[in-house]
Length: 252
Ligand SMILES: [Zn+2]
Image (cartoon, rainbow, N blue to C red; front, side, top):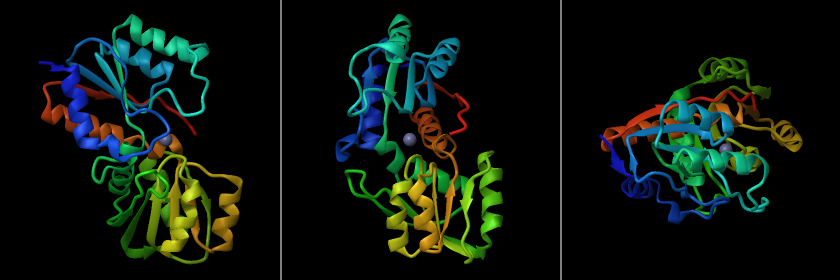
């Protein structure tokens, strides 16, 4: 039971349509390994620990949300980049990475999957192809207090969020996983009661307070664990391969 690597990539491209996105890193096959894939490992970031765990799992390919070759970074293969890529090449393992297309996919994406984890019915998805406004919006069946929603986030994600509290109850929410705190202004334009992202910046706190909306920084890793996992499970249903998601703990 195995799939050709090119067929796996073709399926991923058909699902995620990376050509629609102007991204900060190349989407698709970033490092080419062996021609056939029987075992696929997924993870959030292609860090050394994930690669070592994938080798222990005898993976043929690793699929991640955060791959390599980011815009503006030093392109030379030195330091941790050399060690990571050397490990992949030495073990003939492919690295596949999808960034914005995996945030935005309407059912398998990080934003959609976070909504599913949290039980928030989605109302709309605002998306511009260049990643300038990747905010999803939802509405709870009944309004809840801010502290109750913070407790819900902590329970579901296994991590206490930073909560910048406001007076109002929460019914309408917007969110963008990962480092999406800068999109809080889009959430304010939507008129929601709360905005959720992974990370926080100094100014996010002021923007939330001065617009009197709740803000939750629920963890970059914690909010982006679910997309790649759902994608791996989907691939295992439609292609002859085994899939395993490996969670490399990250408190950020
Ligand atoms: Zn991210």
